[in-house]
Amino acid sequence: MTDTVTVSTHILDTSIGRPALGVAVELSVRPGVHAEWTVHGSSATDADGRCKDLPALPEDTTHVRLRFETGPYFTDQHHASHQQGKQAEEQQDAPRTRDSGAFFPEVAIVFAVEPGEHYHVPLLLNPFGYSVYRGS
Image (cartoon, rainbow, N blue to C red):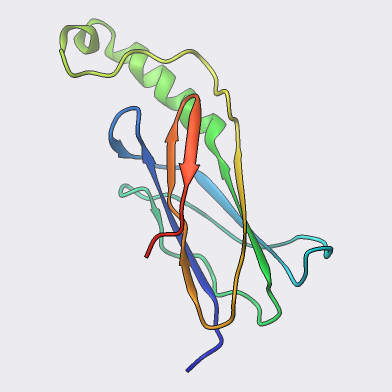
């Protein structure tokens, strides 16, 4: 059995019921609760809202921080909604146009890790709220 710790994540935009494409994700680590954070890797979500290329963690890692840059994603979504214009308004199941900008321009999730485990941490996101959980 290996003591390697791995992390994966994905984002679902619950306001449109679709994966969030192109969200930058930064992975930072630290070897103790009072230690400084060190950036260990970065990625961006793919068409399925997943980051599949985050690196395995250093052996002494006890805490991980995933930082999601949600502001640019919501700005892009806002502009796309305006481009659709009346087409979106005419569709009964289309999402309403969002306010410009993002209430949460970034989301940072910090969690503790144990050697030999894999941690999948999904982010359920909408313009005015989010939730996370340990997935499988």
